[in-house]
Every structure is written in structure tokens, then in C-alpha cells.
Amino acid sequence: MIALKLAAIGATGIAAQWLAWRLRLPAIVLLLAAGFAMGPATGLIDPVRDFGEVYKPVVGLAVAIILFEGGLTLNFREIRESSQAVQRVIFPGGLMVWIGAALAAHFAGGLDWPAAIVLGAVLVVTGPTVIMPLLRSAKLKQRPASILRWEAIVNDPIGALYAVVAFEVYLVWLGAESAAEAFTGILIAFAFAIGAGFGLGRLLAWAFGHGHVPDFLKAPVLFSAVIALFAISNQLLEESGLLAVTIMGIALANSKLAALGEVRRFKETVTILLVSGLFIVLTAALDWPTIRSIDWRAAAFVALLLFVVRPLAMFVATIGSPLSWQERLLIGWIAPRGIVAVAVIGLFGTLLVNIGVEDGTRMIAYTFAVVVASIVLHGFSLGPLSRRLGLRSTEEPGLLIVGGSRWATALAGKLDEMDVPVRISDPNWNHLSDARFAGIPVHYGEILSEHAHHHLDLNRYGALLAATDNDAYNALVCTDFGPDIGRTNIFQIGDMNQQSERQAMSFTLGGRQLFEPGLDLFELNRRMREGWTFQSTRLTDEFTHERFVETRARDTRVILWRKPGGRLVFSAASGNQKPQKNDVILSFAPPRPKKDVPAVTDAKPQPDLPDAQAP
Image (tube, rainbow, N blue to C red; front, side):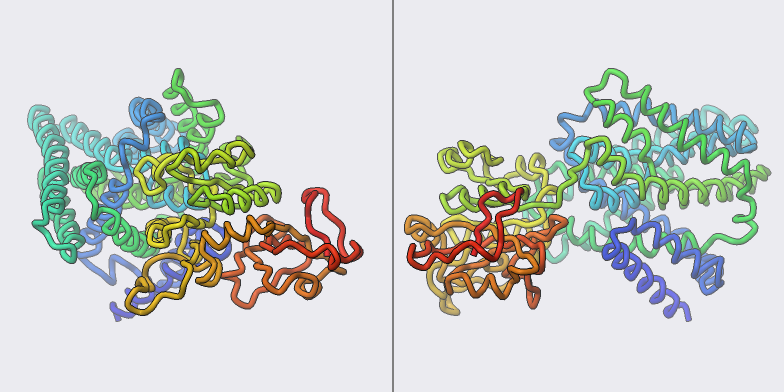
């Protein structure tokens, strides 16, 4: 029976993730709804009853793995232009949120001071499990996205440790332990968490980099190290393990470890599974008495926290920083709470109840109220607000072209005329001269470099075309960017001849072929010299796709078409799809003999496409 429930949790979580992707909704909202339906609404799952004593330890280990994976994404090179803002958001911004949340919990929420102070500390966290999915779909500019990601990952263990400090101080005030013992214990635990996390991260980087661990064991070794470090650190001080594993992840992320990319992708997959399951399990653990305790006082507390405390704290903390007022407003508003807040408050709520603080139970209800309200409000408002503030691209993702040839420049020029975001990347400055002269955005540098990874905004490009004269390099670029952009949106120019089985590369390498193998860059440039051109044609009721095919030369190549909303559909990946009315077809066509040019009767050039080709 337990196995069946675990299977149901896993299947429901992934189904919610897929449905959110299809409907373009925040996945966390659907996960919360699924957890409520499977738990309080129907009683199908009761984590405490079903999983017994292993429930809380497993949740803690899962949270540790999630925070470690988040730490793996934090590279110091990424925050060079926003490091000051990140520091201010965490310190003193986090402290101000703690104080403000504690005051709101006591005076508006009606909690006793011990519960209010611990609750305020826990709600400093903002939750990478919520922020990461939101950032993937929000398409924010690099600086605000980087600040929100760093805050979410770093503040999670810090918020938990704030709660530890608050709880220890309360024990000292009760006389349960001396101030010297509490201070010494906290200091030792902090020092161990930071030192052990950094030291173990550097040790693993050295071991991996010098070949002391084979590739097939790297991910298992990391998992074992994370679990061991988390458990040992927690023996010294509860929840200090979260800080330790986060520091370990950051240390590995900045170690320039070649194998880190594959490990990170594997960790991302595991994290998606853990996040999906944990949100359902933690929501299902709610009971009706806890839900009924959410009254007008809880609503007042949530409103003060979201609309007053957090925005005011961030506004004051970022005074004098290089952030614009739009960025400060966005960062002050966006602070969804997630798994870490729920998991940590469950522990301290129980501890406070055990020592006679009755409001420990209400803390759990208040935290869930904050989690649900912040996820719904911030999840659905991030996109519109960032667009209104000019911190998000309002355009559909465009095309990133690697290789600055004459053919690629002409393609980019036509896409630019069609209002499709496009950029050409090439490490040779001379190859970009025509594009720069034409006003086409360029990226001068190696596309595979770490600099490009941190400074090239991939959110603006939903597809990539590798179009250099080196087929092996094209395949390498496509293979490297496939996980980031999506392998179905990665294309490359084929080689001149169909290769034999002995010479052909593995099907796991490279991207989709934009043309048949015979059309390599040399052949495309030759056709350009012969007068071939890129043509954009809008389909209408009269000038249909069938009419387009009839009026074009047989060797015309349709590259893609642009939907009215801006989405690009590549012919090489279209399957059975065909362009429809109001779609704009981009084709590469040979010159027409003058005697064969028909009269312009079927379609008229559109205002936004002055050179659209009429039949």
C-alpha cells in the first residue's frame, strides 16, 4: 500500500509539472492543489500516518539535496555587477525582514513573542524550489534574475539558522541552558558548517579533477557526501546542515570542474522529482484543525508581510546600490516561500509546543498561509509586473546564430526585418563586420566560453543555429546548448557529402539538420553569390500555402515560418505542420528568370514586411 501511495505521489507530481508547462502556469500552484486534494480533501495520503518516523528525516535530506543543487548554480563570476545588491538583500535586508515579520506576527497575528520571533526568522527564506521555476518562465533580465536566485539559495539556510539562534536564546531566557553553552554551541556549529562545507567541496573538486573518482561514480559520491555532511552537521546544531551543503555546492560551482555540467544536469533532474514530491507530501500533511486556525489575524499577518515588511525592507536595504527603481520594486515584491520554510517551521513548531508554547501549532498554519499566498500572488504577477517594469522581454524568443558568414548575416538581416530577435556569435571580429555594419546584434567571442555562459542572455533565444564551416564544431555547439535551449530547438548546417557509417558522428551528438547533408556552408555561400536570396512571404486567404508552393522554384528551401504571436516554427522540426493564414514564411530561394516573373496579383506586401515577396 505504501509503495502504491509513493507511486501516486510521484506520478501526480510529474503530471502537475507537465500540465503547468503546457498551460504556462506556475508549477508550484498545481502541486499545492494536488497535495491538498490528496491530503486534507480526500485523506488518501497522510504522511505522518503512512511513513511514520522516516517522514521528517527524509524530508530533511530531500531539502538538503535541493539546496546543494541550488548552490551548484551559484558562480561568483555571475554576480560581479550585482554582488553589492546581493549582499544588501541578504544583509541587512534579511535581518530587517526578520524583525518586521516578528513584529507583524505578534501585533497583527496575535502570536506570543517566542513563536513570533522564530516565525519571523523562518520567513526570511524565499525558496529556490519556487524561484527557479518562476525564473525559467519569467525571462527576466540577467541582474534581477541573478539577485533573486542568489537570495533564494543563500537565505534558505540563513533563515533556518536565524530560527535556531532565536530558539536557543529563548531556551537561555527560560533557564534551560546557560548563555555560554548556547553561544559556544552555535559558534562551533557555524564554524563546522562553513569549514566542512567548503573543505569537502574543494576536496571533491580535487578528487574529481585528478581522476581519483571515475565518472560513473561522481554523482553517487556527491549524493553520499551531501547526506553525510548534512547529518553530521545537524548533530552539532539542528538545521546547520542546510548551511553546510549550500556552502559545499557553492565551493564546487566555483572550482572550474569539467565534469560539473553533467553532474549538475543529473542533480537538476533529481531536484525536479524531489520538489514535485515534497510539495505534495508537505501539503498533504495539513489537517483540518490547522487549516481552520487560519483566521483574520493570519490574513492580516500575511498582508503585512507581503505588502509592507518585505517591500520596505528591500527598499531600505538597497538604498545607494546600483539597482534601478524598477529592479528594487520587483525584488521587494517577489519573495515566494517554499519547502524549506514549511519543513523548518514544522520542526520548531513541535519543539515550541513541547516546551509549553501553545502558539507553536499556529505557526505552522501561518507559514502555510504565507506559502500559498506568496506562491499564488508572486507566481502569477511576476510575468506581468516584470513586463510592465521593462525587466522582461515582451518578444517571443528569437534565434541565436553561431558563425558570421555572408549567408548567416543575410539570414539574420531578414529575421531582423521580420521583427524576430536575432544575434550572431563569432570569435573572429572580421567575420562580424557585415553584421555590425547592418546593425545586427552580435556577440564577439567564443560561444562555448564561460564568459558567454554568464553574459549571453539565452532567455531571448528560443532556438540556435550552428552555421560555421566546421561540421564537428557545429555538432559540439549544438550538443553543449541542447540542455539549455532544448534539443528540439537546436539546428546545424550539414556537411557537403553524406558520410559513411565509419565517419558519421553518433546520433547523440549535434542538433537537427536544417537542410539535407549536401547543403553545407560552402554550398550556401556559393548560392548566395549566384543570386539566391532570403524571402519573407505572408500567407492570406487568397495566397495560401498551396499557392506559395506552386509559385516557387522547386529547389526553394523553406527555413521557418513566424506565427502571428511571434513563435518560430522551423521546417526541419515541423513534422506534419504546415504554415497557416497570417504566418510569415522565410525561404531561401534562387533568382527568378525575368521572363518567368508573374504579375503581382495574389498577395500584397505587408506594412511590417516591406520586402515580402509577392508571387
